[in-house]
Image 1 (cartoon, rainbow, N blue to C red):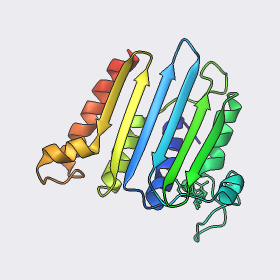
Image 2 (tube, rainbow, N blue to C red):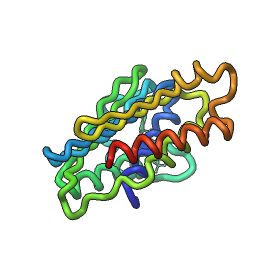
Image 3 (cartoon, rainbow, N blue to C red):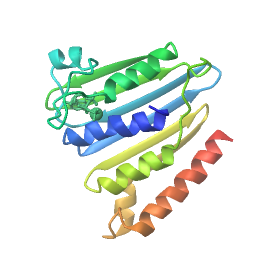
Image 4 (cartoon, rainbow, N blue to C red):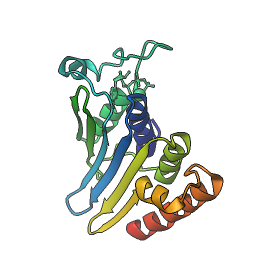
Length: 180
Ligand SMILES: Nc1ncnc2c1ncn2[C@@H]1O[C@H](COP(=O)(O)OP(=O)(O)OP(=O)(O)O)[C@@H](O)[C@H]1O
Ligand SMILES: [Mg+2]
């Protein structure tokens, strides 16, 4: 996987596939503590304890189109390469939380990549799902909540090109600001 944003896209796609109606994506970066934490939380169908035990095995998948599932094992690999790890907490019928922590100073740390593309791709492709995205870096925080956006749109679809362009511009500006 090229970068962390593509991992996030992949993990959030699992949440979409699990029937989630709300997906919370958060990035918490603490530069002084050399810590970079990514969390994807959903209210989808969840997994049993037994399934979670095996889920990092690439041959563990409920996919029917091919016999390997790589999303979670690749994320685990990327996190572990930096000295971090992945944690999967899931309750059947309630939802799943995937947390990956990275150690940014490690030579194998991947770049965040294009998180704006990841978030807008998710929103564009899944207008029926609510997304809450938060990015915090030290004492600066940005939050994007599609429930708030939808409420303000007054019936205009969230995946219309005007709205997506506005969301994209807002993200770019806010993230520039946070990472300044
Ligand atoms: N958030 C989730 N909620 C419920 N089940 C999940 C979730 N994430 C993963 N799973 C289950 O774990 C399996 C493995 O997920 P993983 O992302 O590693 O591979 P995949 O989605 O099957 O294939 P790929 O990601 O390569 O397209 C999935 O097939 C699905 O059954
Ligand atoms: Mg997957």
